[in-house]
Amino acid sequence: EMQVKRVVLNSRPGNNGVPDPENFRLEEVTVSPDLEDGEVLVRTIYLSVDPYMRCRMNEDTGAEYLTPWQLSECVDGGGVGVVQSSRCSTCVEGDVVTSFNWPWQTQAVLKGSGLQKVDPQLVDGQLSYFLGAVGITGLTALLGIREKGHVTKGANQTMVVSGAAGACGSIAGQIGRLDGCVRVVGICGSEEKCNALVKELGFSAAINYRQDDIPARLKETCPDGIDVYFDNVGGDISDTVIAQMNNNSHVILCGQISQYNKDVPYPPPLSEETQENLRRKNITRERFMVLSYMSKADAALYELSQWVRSKKIKVLETVVNGIENMGVAFCSMMKGGNTGKQIIKIS
Ligand code: NDP
Image (cartoon, rainbow, N blue to C red; front, side, top):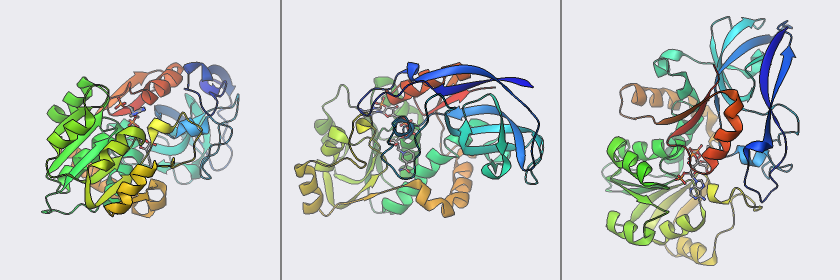
C-alpha cells in the first residue's frame, strides 16, 4: 500500500464565476501498487494547468470533446512522469510518459494504452517542455500558424499576437518571425511581460493592454497594417486588432480566454461592427482546434524540438512547486500570473 496525494474538484465556480483555489481540495489516499495486466505505476513529475480546464469545471462544458470534472473526483489534465513498474508491453520501468488525462495525483496506476512514451533527448532532459513548447501548446502555435495563418516568406507580413506572453502566444510570435513575418507585435497584460517579449523573445514591439492606448500603439507599431492575427483572447482586444487588419488578411482563432468566465457559447458571438469589418475586408477567421490535426503532431513536435534545442525558439515557464498548489496555479494562470507556460512541479 502507498500513501499518495491527489487533488479533487471541491466545488464549481458556476458558469459565470471566476475560479478560486477553494474549488479544489487536496486529499491523501492509499493506493495499491499491485498491477493488473496492461497497467502501469507512474510517478508524476510535472502537471499542466490550461485555460480549457475552466470549461471542465462547469457541469456542462459547452464542448462535445470535453467532459466535465466530477465533484469529489480526482481532477486530470496534461502530465508527464516516469514509469515505476509496468505490466504493459509498451513500457518499462524508467520510461518517460505523458498523457492528456493524467490524474492530479503524486503516483498513480494507469492504463498503459493511455500513455504516450516520449524521448527525453527531444527536450535535452527538460521534461516540462513536453507540456508546453514541445507539447500541446507548441503544437497549437505551430499548427495554428501553418493551417490558418497563410504566412509566406518574403511577403512583408505583419503578425499580431494576443495573449502574447502566455504559453501559446510566446511560441506563436517566435514562429511567426521564423516563418518569415517581418514584424511581430505582442499584446499582453504587464510591463514585465512586454519587456520579456521584446528583449528575450525577439518580438518587434509589445503593447500592454492594461495601460496603453491599444489602437494608437497598433498604428505606431504596425505601420503597414496587420496581415495575420493570432488570437488567444477575443473580446475588446480582438475587436480593436481586427479593426486595423488589412484586406485579405487572416485571423487564427486559437482561443478567447477573455470570455471563459462567462456563460457564452464557443466561439463567443462577435459584435455587428467586427462582423462587418471581417466581411468588408475579406478577412478569414476559421476556428482552429489543435486536436483536429494530430496526424501532423509527430513531425511538428520534431520541428519544435529542433528549434528549442538550437535556441531559435526561447522557452519561458512559470514553475510552481507542489501538488497542493494546483488550484492556486490554475487560478493564477487564468488571471495572468504566468509568463510563458504555467507548470507545476510535483516531484
Ligand atoms: P496562457 O499561458 O496564455 O495563459 C492564459 C493567459 O491569458 C494569461 O497569462 C493572461 O495573460 C491572459 N488573459 C487572461 N485573462 C485575460 C483577459 N481577460 N484578456 C486578455 N488576456 C487575458 O494559456 P495558453 O497558452 O495555454 O492558452 C492561450 C489560449 O489558447 C487560450 O485561449 C486557450 O484556450 C487557447 N488554446 C487553444 C487550443 C486550440 O486547439 N485551439 C489549444 C491550447 C490552447 P495577460 O497577463 O496577458 O493577461
